[in-house]
Length: 380
Image 1 (cartoon, rainbow, N blue to C red):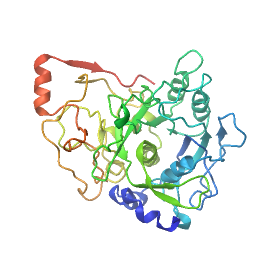
Image 2 (tube, rainbow, N blue to C red):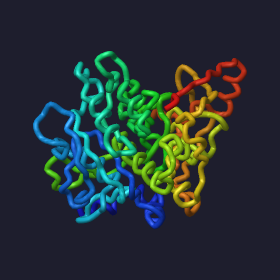
Image 3 (tube, helix red, strand yellow):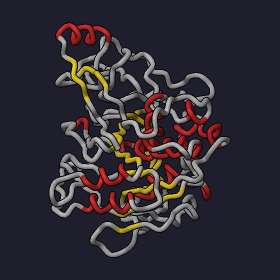
Image 4 (tube, one colour):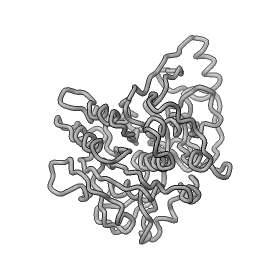
């Protein structure tokens, strides 16, 4: 039932949402949601949805959601919670819907890829953040010449592009696009304990993680009830976009580069080997409260790279960490520390690994000189 939705949004308490809302609700920020469409008539989204774009070949507009996913995404970002609906992490945000066909993970995309046009439309809108819910193992979002020109165009226009890394870790863990492109922030999903979920895809393209387990969603396009089995990359991406909106709302003079750097700088990575990067959580678990409530995080120069050059281990596959890190689901008050999407514990036989390297592995790699300079981002 819709009336039960808010009580099941466990991550809002874990991220200290109520405390952050006393400072900002994300007002002044617009998020373009590239998804299945957004229904603006749910109780939680009334007054929250602006004019959008239909990037499909189908009849209807951007507000015709054909499976409920886009509306869920919008509510997770900007829902007001009215009528017992979902309360967004940034309920002061306005949504610009961009409707696009969704693809199965292994579905071959059409030659005239609508994601290219969808990203351009979002880049031309007033949105500061572009939330991309579509994903595929094939390179999508390219133009007819095979170039990711739309993403480069969006970055040049100062937009922050965010997409999920996918939910097929147990089905081959093939790299997910557009999250793997250098212009896009790749978001992995974490569980209640801050560990990578079993299905969360991993690799060098993971930049950060956000909650993606047991999150309510609209069951279907009838919009009669919520189901409890939501989450994954779609939910994690929405919460990452909302987190960016909260930080950006507090610092409207910042560029996308600065907002992203602060999110990386304040991400939780306690217990990690200094200077390492996680294939499962990237820079760590997202914690907007560290900036919104405590003012932490170094934004750096406005025109600096989205991610500075890093020297980090680059093994062919993620080795097992030397020791599992303890879950830290509850931490210090203020600062939103509760979400710890850092090192994953390795359960017996479950295949979930944590950091790229542990202390012992780091020493071994150093001994063989197997370091590579990896540039994930390029100049905007």
